[in-house]
Amino acid sequence: MTVAIGQSMPECAIPATSGLTFSSASAKGKKMVLYFYPKDMTPGCTAESSEFRDNIEAFSKANTLVVGVSRDSLKSHDNFRSKLELPFELVADTEEKLCQIFGVMKMKNMYGKQVRGVERSTFLFDSNGKLVREWRGLKVPGHVTEVLQAAQATT
Image 1: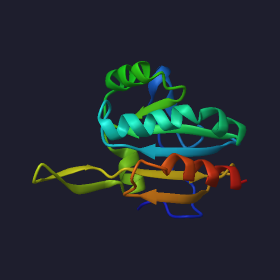
Image 2: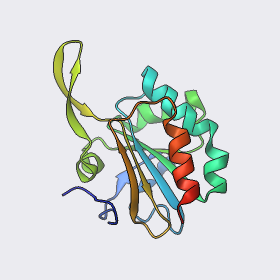
Image 3: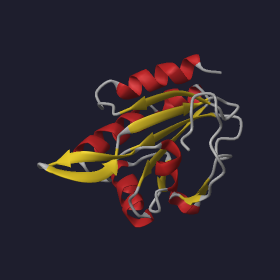
């Protein structure tokens, strides 16, 4: 079962950077942006994460927590976060629990071969923990601005 608009995220507990554990209660009274990306240190993922970093003050003013998710290890996330100076946490979904909850695992073409991977996707939850918007199979340019505008318009 995947989370649909108007639903809350099912309970989960997944390791995140800074020694934290990510769960559906992580936002507690705040809006939350959960963005899924394929791989640390790749060009598109670096650009997307950097845009979220560069707009973090505006997200904070909109009472919105930003959280990145990929299947990379905590060690990889720590390196990625440090290198890009990301001011938000990254979730190490190595067992694909969140990926399954949000239905982001897809067959993709990579250098002419079919591979199973994370479809770049973003989900916005309101301050009551309900999913209000989703973006799937997105392109990085302009995406963070669109998510920010949606967060600012959401209660």
